[in-house]
Image (cartoon, rainbow, N blue to C red; front, side, top):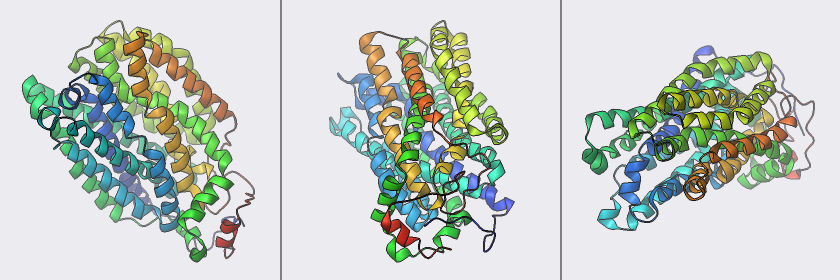
Length: 459
């Protein structure tokens, strides 16, 4: 049975609560991406510390990619739990696990001290991060989308990705600062550890902010009316996969484009600029940092813009722009520091219409009772298969095949996949997220019997 939202017994959150929800969601995302920023900026030092032999940079990129192997499992576990028990409880646990795992990297012994156990311990911590992130991102986006007003979901949702860029920029800036005050030996021996340790207090701040909030009224409205005895984690998972496979597939294809661009531009790019283009450690970091700061300044405008123009036009402009400009901009980057900066900024700005609208677009593809799980499953399976592996694939092809423009070609291929998926996306700008109907759709018919029984008490 599906329900349409009514005005009775529903209290929209006040503006101050919306602001707190934005901060609580964004800081968790910033913590997650602070780790990625630090990891990308310290690639050289991590390689020396954990993969000094034959593996080299490929081993370090494997350490990055391996964290994505457990993300789908995290999505399958955390998503249904978040739909059953609430968003707040899951998000409190995931941010704590992410920050602890990141901080522990800062105290790991090196390969010179314990041999092969050093990279093994690094990989284990990256797996913990991946499993936790499988519930963090989908939950944070869902949490923010359900708190945001329908007509301003793009504007408010863009601040989650502001947190993404803030975390990446903070990680890069922190490493740059340490590079400027410490010599090469100090950085190689202990300086690289400091940014990882900083993730713990950042995560604790996020944990505190999240503990001060209730679950979104949109979720509570549905949760308070259902027969919870008939709702189990397995029921939630079965309902999501069997009843909503179509939006899961659409979102999967869109995330291929989104995250191949994301992890190529924001995670692999420092390595590419240093090893392929030949920029120095500091020059490569400055290109990324300046580009990310410009993207941070622009992202709220793209989010606000999507509220008036719709999500689909924003995505079409981004996908077509990246497809057309990827090869020219990557060629331009090879011409030196200034041109590398121009190329990175151009691609970054064309990527923003996707990034800015994630929290407005993806949660609106599912009804409330399966929103967390649907988002987490589709997003994390696609990210694990194509996004998180992008740095490893790019590095392997560039290093072994000698094709320096491969990252551009890989991005173009992903954009084609995204365009196919985008064609089938329903526009949901301004649509309500309330009730058990899919936003923007008159009625949802489900064949999943346990789900119907669970919601039979809803009016």
